[in-house]
Image (cartoon, rainbow, N blue to C red; front, side):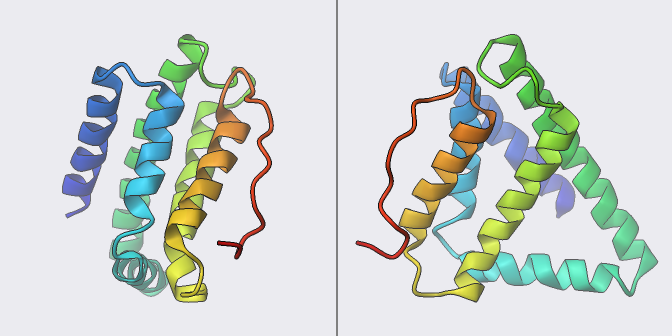
Length: 150
């Protein structure tokens, strides 16, 4: 299951990039793919695995291996973006990949933490966060409405 997740992630990145889209757009598209649909289901499975990894060395090793391969994939995409001048060259790709993956994991918690937050509005906030933190050159600041306003 973990390998099929990585394969699907790699395929989504490749399709986005094959269309000639910017690297940061591929990262944002992945965040949007994770956010609105069945957030509770995805979050529940993730948290079950994380919790079980504290009790089972075998699950911990599998989870860490999967996380490492995912980080390597995202770091590769970030390096490509740096080479193309689209991703901030000052960022370490490995660390940035780990942080982005954690942000994506955190996005899955939103439906559990506060079911009243509009997932599409949250996706727009994630979009701004990613573009402003890793995009290069830096985009001009765009005012966004306060969370909760419709």
